[in-house]
Picture 1 (tube, rainbow, N blue to C red):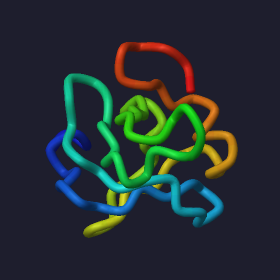
Picture 2: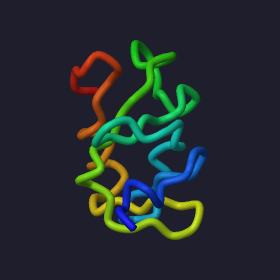
Picture 3: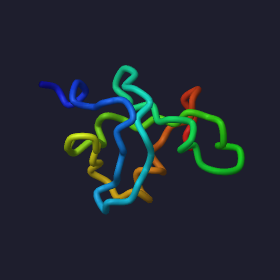
Picture 4: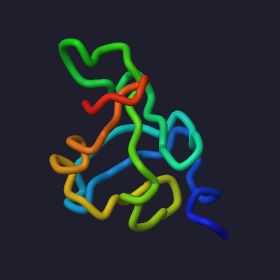
Length: 85
């Protein structure tokens, strides 16, 4: 089963260091779309953010573990519309 098919809606996305990065809204193409409630602060509030499936190291039940630490993974997030976060 492809890793994409193992990712469930509302699963927690965590960095390799165990830090909460976001919550899965759904998988869209080759990216995980995070819920708006995990959208950050300032001009990021109310926007969906995306994380590339290429950063997914493992799916463990209701947790998606990334290959990068949480603070690094956030720098790879893309905002709705394709811009860097």
